[in-house]
Structure formats: C-alpha cells, structure tokens
Length: 374
Image (cartoon, rainbow, N blue to C red):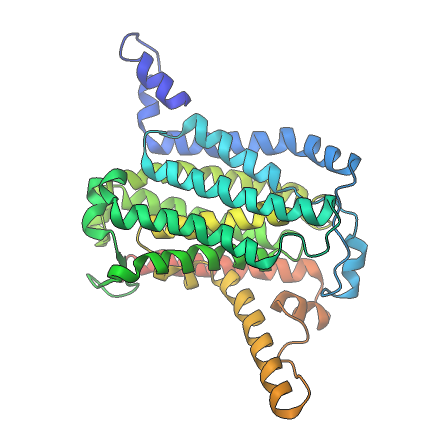
C-alpha cells in the first residue's frame, strides 16, 4: 500500500528517496523491521487482553506431566504473528503482484481456520475444538483454489509461470524437472495441507515451532529473491519467475514476525501461538515452495517439521499394527511427536529446542547448497 502510494506520487512529484522503494532488498529490510516493531508494540497488549479474558492453554493429556504447569498460559498468540506479517506486507509489498495476493489469501484463510479451532477449544470449551475433518476441509479448500489458479490460469499470476505451471524442480539434479500435469493440483493440496499440519504438530515446546519457522523463512527469502532475478536464476539453473521477487518482502516480514514472537514464546513462554498461528505459518511455507516450484525441497528445508510429522505417523502405524498382530499396541517412541520422546528421556526443554535450531540451520545451509550443486 505504501509502496503503491509512493510509486503513484513519484510520477507527479519529486519525493526524495522514493527511488529506494523500487528495490526489493530495501522493502524487505523495511518489512522485517516493521514486523519486529509491531510484535514488540502490540505483543504485550494482545497477551494482556488474552490473559484478561482467560484465554489460556488447556492441560494436555497427551503431553508429559511437566506440561501441566503450562496450563493457563495465554494462547491464540498467533494473532500477534498474523498482525506482524500482514501489516508489513500491506505496507511494503506490491499489492498488484498476484504472488503476493495468493500468499496473503492463504495466510488469512488458514489463520481463520486456526482461529476458529482455538476459539471453539478455549472460549467455547470444546475439548477437540474444530473437528478434524472440518479443519482438513479448510486446508484442502484453499489448496484447491490456489492449485486451480496456478494450473488453469497461470497467465493471471505471471506470464513466466505458464511453462512451469505443473512442474517442480528436482534438487541436486541440473535441468531435471518433474511435470505432474493433471496431478499437480493434488500435489499442491498435499504440500500445503501437510506443511500446515506439520508446523501444528511441532508447536509443542516453548519456541520450538516459531524458531524453526524463522530459520526456514530466511532460506525462503533468499530462494524467492534469486527466483525472481534473471541473472541469479540463470546462473543457478533454476526457473526464472519474474514476479516471485516480491515474495522476498513477505518472507522478510515472516522473519521479523518470527523473531518478534520468539521474544514472548521463548522458555518459559508468556504466550502460545495456538492453531491461529501454526496452521497459517505452515501454509505460508508450503505455499511459497509451491509458487517458486521448489516443492520437492520441503522435506529438506523443513526437515525439523518433517521429522516431527514422521514420528507421529510411525508411532500410530506401528501401534495399530502391533495391536492387531499381538493384541497389544507397542510404541517406537516413548511419546510422539518426537520432541516429547526426548522430554521423556530426560532432556531439558531448552536443550531440545536449541538443538532443533542447530539441525534447522544445518538443513537450511544444505537446502541453499542444492542450488549450486545441481
């Protein structure tokens, strides 16, 4: 909005410094700083309001007993994250860019689904919140909408997207592209839904999910920038998608929002993001990978989220299998997701989170390295 206003006024008036707004790097830095300021300014206000209305975390029976002390901590802090992402995006982003419009739509849509789940769970005191299948409907519906637009109307988004509309690049292998054709919309549904749920499953320890989201967001800021730059994309032999550079501003806002929320969510947490934040954050990560045609990088880039999700799947499948075969369910992990397993082994919460950051940073470096060694 601010970007468009300055652009319009500069056609008729000389505005000192207005030329800086043409640079994505400048607006990305401004978006990150704005997100931080909003988090620090509005964070305490929102936390206080949540506490006043007794919107607190419920005791979880599927978590270690040490988590009972967390009951009553304000939740739905995802409102801080959403505010810190969307306001900078609206201020510094190019709202004529369809990539930006799609990522904003995804954020708001999944944020609304998560908010409804938290509202039913915490305010209306329904233990399960939004019924699982309805949550999936919300995730699948936005995935179908975006996947359909990309596949059937790529020219609406960006003319350079047309030859890549149903394709995805393959990591480590130069010039190899996997074209999903009619199955592409289904791939988009799987990517966005799975990533949204993966971040949700990871959000079980203070600072665990938001810190790793911030790490992934740094990589996404770099990936979106080089994808939208002809020289860089040609040098790295990745698809040149002209408009994706604007997603760098959004990714930078996500970095700032993650750091700002981590300030309040670090152990011991003053607030939890709830599904309001986790579903939207996962959707943003999945959507950005879809838009820059790097869907197959997600298991590596979001490796921490992938491992958390895989631990839950393995636990459930093995438990059901052993129960059917031996009459008694057995477990691979002491408790799933895997961060609870480490807790049950006696690891302090802060150590689990810190080591997840180390793993996340290593995976981020490996992800960025794949662009050079293709």
